[in-house]
Amino acid sequence: MDSPYNNLPKRAFWRTGVGERDANDPGDLYHPRWQIAAKNRIFTAGSCFAQHVGRALRRAGAKVIDTEVLPRNVSDGLKYKYGYGLYSARFGNIYTARQMLQLMGEAAGETRPALPIWEHADRYFDAQRPAVEPRGLDTPEQVRSHREAHLARVSLALLRTDVFVFTFGLTETWEHIETGTVYPTAPGVMAGYFDPDLFRFKNLNALECYDDFVQIRAHMKKLNPTCKFIITVSPVPLTATASGDHVEVATASSKASLRAACAMLVDEYDDIDYFPSYEIITSANARGIYFKANKRSVARVGIDTAMGMFLAAHNLSAKPAPTLATAAAAAEFCEDVLLEAFVE
Image (cartoon, rainbow, N blue to C red):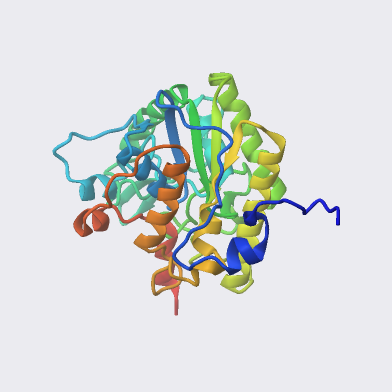
C-alpha cells in the first residue's frame, strides 16, 4: 500500500524508536542542522541545567566564551560558589528568555531594570543575579560598581559570539508591575522583600517565550549576521509553583510552553537548532533512571548521557567524566531550590 509512512526510518515509530529500545540506550534523538565548527566561539546561558552544557563543551576543547574569570589557582568549588566559570559571563542562572533579553538590552545601554539593588541583613545584592555574591556586598555603591563592570563583560561576550546556546528553564517569573522588569527569583527569597503593590507573578505563555527569543535573535544578528543558535529545554521540574496548580501540573504546563516555543523557533528559522536534552532525560524509555531520588535533580548518568549525545553529534570528543570530588564542586546551583525552605 502506498502511504507517506512507507520507508520511514525506525526512529519515526514509537515501537521501534522507543518501545523496543534498551533502557540504557539513549536512542537516535538528535541530528543537528549544522556542526559547531572548531573556530566557533560559543556563548552559553540559561537555567541551572545549562551549566552542564558549558562544562561539557569546555572539556571537549570547544571555544566557550568566558569574559569574567578568576586566577587559575582558585578552586573550582570557590569559583562556582561566586558565579564564575558557569556561563560566558558572571550573570548566574537566567531562567527565562525575557530575563536574557532584558540583560542584553541593559548591556547595550537601552534599558535599566527597576529596583536593581535588594537588601538583606544589612548587606546589599544585585537583584538580577543575587546568588553570585552569596554574602552580599557592603554598600549599594559597590553593587552598582560591580554591575557596571559586569555589563561591560557581557557586552564583550556577546560581541564575540558565533554560536549562541540557551537553555529555557521556566515560564514562571516575578515582575515589577510598573516597568515589567523581571527577576531571577522572587523578592524575599534571597534578598529584598515582597510588596504586592510593587511586584506580581507572571507566567509566560509559549508565544511570549517565542517572541522574546525572536528579539534575542534579532539583537545577536545585529552584532554578528552569521550567528547561529542552539536552544534546549531544561528537564529539571519546578521546585515550587505560584500558579495555584499542583507543582506537577505546573511543571507539565511550563515545559509544554517552552517546548512549543522552541518548536516554533526551529520551524521559523534555519539558523536555530534544537537539542532534545528534555526528551533524553524525561524519556519513558529511561524509566526514571536519569533522576536522583528526589525525582527532580538530574543524576550524573543522565547528564553524561545527554552531554555525550550532544558532543558526539557535533563531532566533539567527550573527555572522561570528572572525579566525584570535582563533580560535587561542579554541582549546579539553582536559586529556586531555596524555595524548599518555605515548605511547611
